[in-house]
Image (cartoon, rainbow, N blue to C red; front, side):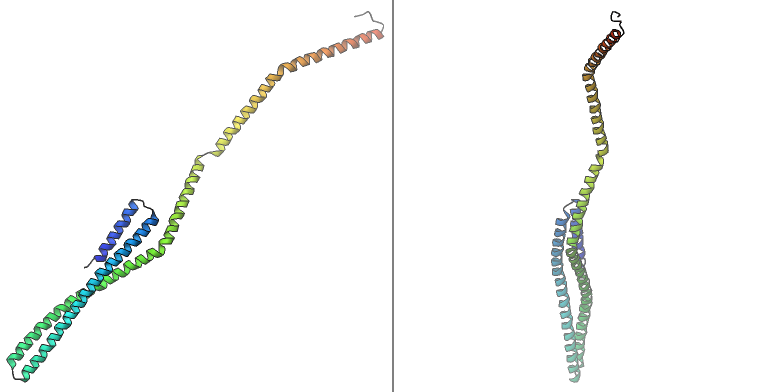
Length: 227
C-alpha cells in the first residue's frame, strides 16, 4: 500500500502539466483539477480504509493469540496442581507457540499502524490542497481575467504606438499647404491678363485728361493755335 497517495499526486501533476502544455482555459483547467482531486481523495479514502481494516484484523489476531497463550498458561497451572508435570510442559509449549504468534502479529501490527498513520497524513495533505484550491479558485480566475485585460490593453497601446500620428498629421498639413499654394497660383494666372488691360485703359484715360488740361491752359494764355 505505500505510495498510494504519492502515485495519485503524480497523476494529478501530470494532468495539470498536460493541461498547461495544451494552453487550456485556466478556469476550465482549475475546475477539472478540483474534480480530479476530489476523485483522488475518494480513491485514497477507500485505500486507507482497506489498510485500516487490515490493521484492525492484525490487532484482533494478536489479541486472539494472547488469549490462547493465557489459556494455555492456566492449563499448565492446572496440570502442575494435578501432579502432571509432563502435561504442564506440553501446555507451556503451546503457550510459547502462541506467544510467538502474538509477537509476529505485534510486529505486523506496528508496521501496518505506521503505514496507516503515513497514509492518513498524506490524505489530510491532499484534502488541504483541495480545500486551498477551492478557496483560491475565484482569486486565480480574477487574476487570469485581469491578465487578459492587461494584455489586450498592451496590444492596443502597441498598435497605437506603431501608428505615428504626428507624422500623418504633418503629411496632411503639407498637402493642404500645397493645395493652397496651387490655388493661389491658379488665381494669379487667371486674373493677370485682365489686370494688365485695365491698367492700360486707366493710363489712356489719364493721358486724355492731361491733353484736355493742356489745351485749356493754352486757350487761357491766348495760344489756342499752338499745339
